Length: 207
Image (tube, rainbow, N blue to C red):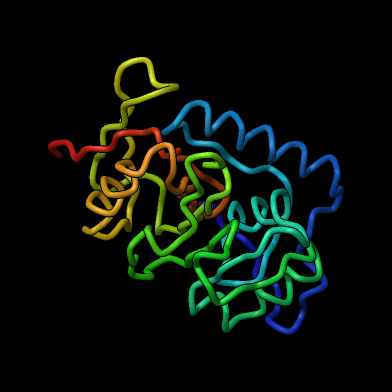
């Protein structure tokens, strides 16, 4: 895992991109590539240093994709930290307590996952009006092996995220059943991340 220097809790002004336009473009390209190739591990290079417990990759994604038109939902640990003020200062994104209103949702490591159906799933006409859920994990590798199949994957791609709860596969299966509606997920750990678009089929494999 990548090490990062934590921003003091009362310092919400620091930790943004040193070169906002250039770094946001860089992270956006990584996101597009990761969505097009599910299971591919990407590493964020820009020096985003969000307040703990938000990780580097999660913070960089927030800086890149969130703005005043994208309500953000935060899990309890993030909501009680300096993260809401940090997001507000650097992106202008409003924090909402309602999962169904969120365009982006961020969950710190170790948080139990509730039904993905509580988040916005979009509509048949506008499936893109859904929530993207960013889940911080202990590590992107070293956990239970999962097999990915679907668009953007030639045959099968394996990932082994460490820290996903046992309920994840059931929740994901329920989410895929909503297609073309449903949420997309980004798994992050430190400066690394993996994208799981709603089109991806995920099954457990033998260790």
